Image 1: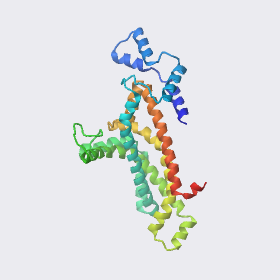
Image 2: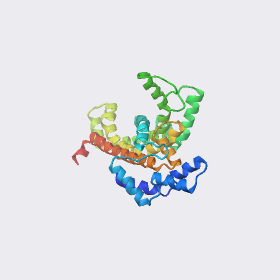
Image 3: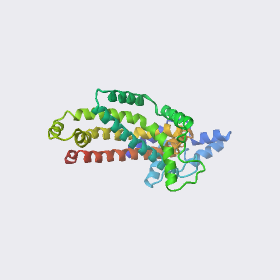
Image 4: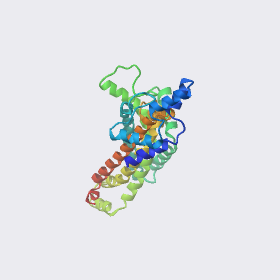
Length: 308
């Protein structure tokens, strides 16, 4: 899977007009044909496409992602400096979306047809229909500009010298708005899916048996209904992990969050394909890892899966 992603990404990027030498020449203001040829030769862009692909695959075999023409630094260094921020944002957004989505979906299912179900269904529809960048901008206007409760961007206070717990709290304050903006869409998906799954599981025979044994409604919902209803929710969460990574580009741009999304956007504009290929490779590996973890989680939720 990873090898296929690497080759496909490389071939697709070859269709993009221009290269790093064109961007560097445009930024310098002028360039001669000889200087352009020297730049392309320096970056290895003067050889045929299949030769470039072979060189790139050879670099990967030696655990190297190459050099960035834009930053004149190893790609591994650039990605290593930013991957922590992106993973922090993604994991926080996903956990927040799962927690709120499952909680809201449970309330909607237990109050089906009543006013809490209708109000939360409308709220879920609004979140589902709202783009993440617009939600982020409105959150900045409300919580940062008007109320002044939370910072508008970045991951730390500029010029701050906090350490230990103070630094952790400072990062958490900067994380709230981008995590909510990124997770809003998924809160709507998980809440509606949890509601539908709970209503479906509630009609099964073993739920009626548990109720007939005298268990309280809360015990039946938490121990029997919700555990089985979480299986489709975790499946969808794993499927949306790649989408969540793609949405990081927009959210990181809105909130000036120093992560892989911003780096990928800057790399596209600079035609820095080495960095972009490294980000795409890492992204594919993260998605594959996330789906493996979802499979393990499902086996824990439903022991019948282990028996297969």
